[in-house]
Length: 180
Image 1 (cartoon, rainbow, N blue to C red):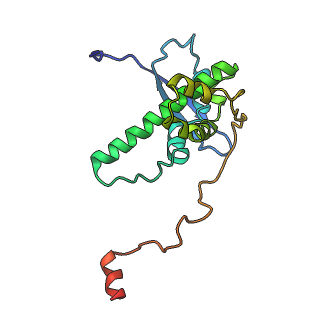
Image 2: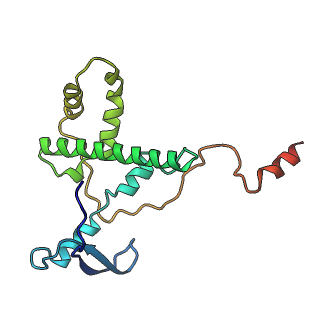
Image 3: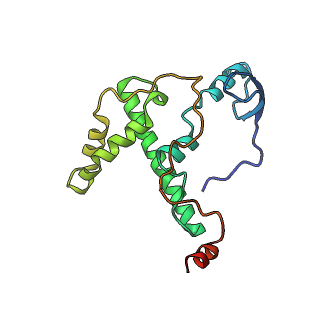
């Protein structure tokens, strides 16, 4: 098992963000990219801003992890790690598809890749080899490419409730007393 170093050299990069639709303020980005000539602060700030394909957004929305279904702590951890494993496998798939198509990996649609995989999942039960299945997933050429929309802003609201029932706003025992 590899050992961790006793000391980790880090660099702090301070950037100022003042753009419509974003919080205005100063940010401190901590990085292991130590050479300021090779990695200027402006380049690091651009990379930080270009993180729109964030893991959290994809996990919560696309992989439907905004509501964990398990009840016990160890099962919640397992569910969380399974979502991370699925995320990493799909990202690997999109990276290979992007390489084959000659496009940048972050431009390939994560949701499109997930839909392709879900469409081909029934074939997993058949006697198709793993290599053939992976090739079938990667075959759509070119992959679904997402447009570059760096200043896109969407309000964080739900359009409709998923269930017709009222929200529980008091202890369950109070509801049971009124129903009896």
